[in-house]
Length: 164
Image 1 (cartoon, rainbow, N blue to C red):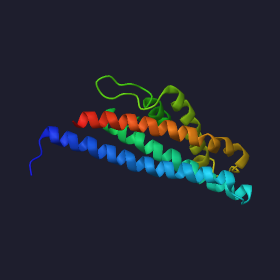
Image 2: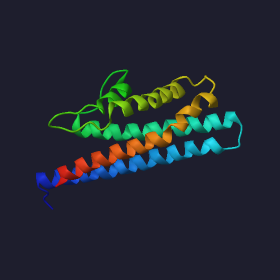
Image 3: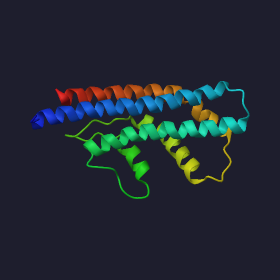
């Protein structure tokens, strides 16, 4: 079977859309699990450990979406020690002739808290996990998740238009 360049591009956009949906579903599942901890009756230590896991997985899923977009539309991932932050910042940029911004600046700034949290959990492995400090991140997840869902839907509409 010989696929034309146009058909190959169309299939690539549809495949990217499907992959973004899979990444989103994983991130959203971890958001829901983290929010369930607000009602959990276990110790704060166990709640903090579970919350850290779910928050890290939530942000990692969102970042996976960003990585896929950057690979396809931005010429690859940022380089250097601050590449995670640069990737997040890039998702709030409109790139003329390539892609629209995925995030608004406000959502980007809210997500940056979760990026920083993930960094602390991964790199400060001897630090105590503090449920009281994590709770506000979890309490804000529901509205952030809704805004991210809207952003993803807008971006998927962009992909579908490209695929036509």
